[in-house]
Image: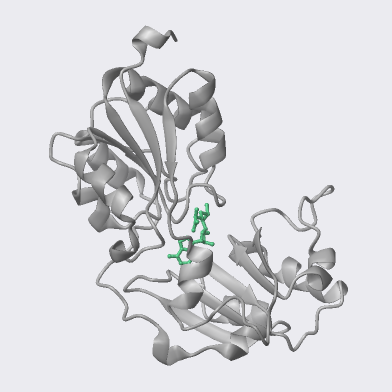
Length: 280
Ligand SMILES: C[S@@+](CC[C@H](N)C(=O)[O-])C[C@H]1O[C@@H](n2cnc3c(N)ncnc32)[C@H](O)[C@@H]1O
């Protein structure tokens, strides 16, 4: 790609966790003026209506029952759009640089000489607890907080997350993508010395109309998650701060949902409204 081919700029925009009112003013301005929108699952549906009708909308999210769209395909979509459109918004749930692959996309675009700018968003690991009145730090209960992904198989041979060390190293643990591996995570934390009676909270679809939350103890967490049929997207908070909740301060839930990963039929419908930019 030569400098001459590049027409536009790509904005890596945080959509916030679900409540459309948590969008930043800058994100709102860009969404209202972009001529291409590249988005995935976990983006509030209302935000997709902000760009004008002529905006080229491209879904690059996971399809239900399938793996995520490979990152190189998304990179290719962004690269192609930068040669045909002026203002490309790459909309991501929460914050683009927190478990959102924003860093990879920024590096890819920058390597090709495509102008790119990040627009931070409100991350679900802070907002979902806040929507049940749960502060993730507290002067009397937690001086440190760790954001961690629970996406990895806990028993894989060379795990990146050292759960046993985390059990001792941080006051509050905020776990993203941890639901599927929660049994292994809890076992590792307790093996690392974490008190089985440590309070925990689980917030599913936080800051949306479908929010559901549970409170319990670390030892009871796997049974609670399985028994209540908790599914992604959900945030797990572990630590004494859970007992510092002030439910009265939780915002009212919005009339907004985040669409779960699309089915093949949903995708076909959305593709019919797009130009054929998605690589197959
Ligand atoms: C790929 S990560 C993206 C995180 C995102 N960049 C952020 O800053 O919130 C997806 C995970 O974020 C969490 N998540 C996103 N939106 C959520 C919501 N509204 N309620 C609870 N958890 C959410 C879930 O753990 C989900 O599996």
